[in-house]
Image 1 (cartoon, rainbow, N blue to C red):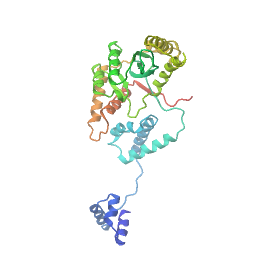
Image 2 (cartoon, rainbow, N blue to C red):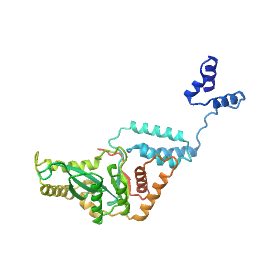
Image 3 (cartoon, rainbow, N blue to C red):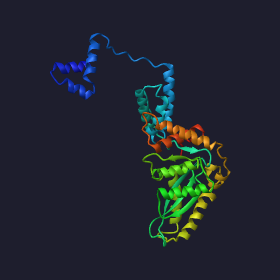
Image 4 (cartoon, rainbow, N blue to C red):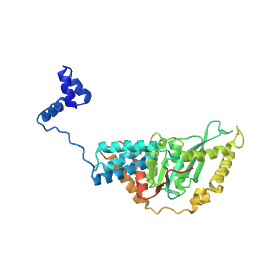
Length: 336
């Protein structure tokens, strides 16, 4: 088609070079195609039907793409998937399938997105800040810094602080680890994506699990837990002038109420605290888990086509290790 149109452009006395420039075809390539066609060698082959092996491979890739498309950050997960299959499938076919799967999944009417959950306590802990009402001793803002277990959502460590940021979070994590409660992974927002924070985690053989770029600062699970705390404090009436000691006492009772006394059907009628204390721990070699995560991250960053930042590579490596060691399960779309 390019040859026929090019000859028409030449016949009309128009700018053939400009036409080829718009298409992104060099004059030498156009000349080569013209010579090949004149000698009868430029013949478009009819598309052949795919083989059974190709259809099986495409179905396997499509299934993994559908699994990715039900979660956030679809493109973020396609990068390691392409790395896995790039020797067995053409890039254009992979892109075409990715677009088709995204369109199919976007058309689905589902009540909830596919969510992942950790299989055991102490697999992953996360750091969170909750803004507290002002008081007599602190006219400015106050925060509760809290560390939660991501399997049971049980509060493991908390403190009141005037400030928030990387160094406050690092000190909280350091004190939390000093208590002997060390997870396999630690989740954090990108405000803590600092080399010192990364060194602190690796020194305790903990794999960093940063949240993706443009991740909401208050994710859904933490936001529900934070809303419980805010509702408790607001139930005493507006404009309560809490002192730090009063606020600490109310927070202690409030979190005890939510973590220890309120029964949760998801844990078989037990509370978050009872579930955390009684559930079986994962039997994983920490050193091997960390080594595999570091090696996989190094492999990602050393690829010639790498487009991941160092923190993105940590996230991809951590999630691959979670699947490899079977420490995470996907709950699937849930019926309300």
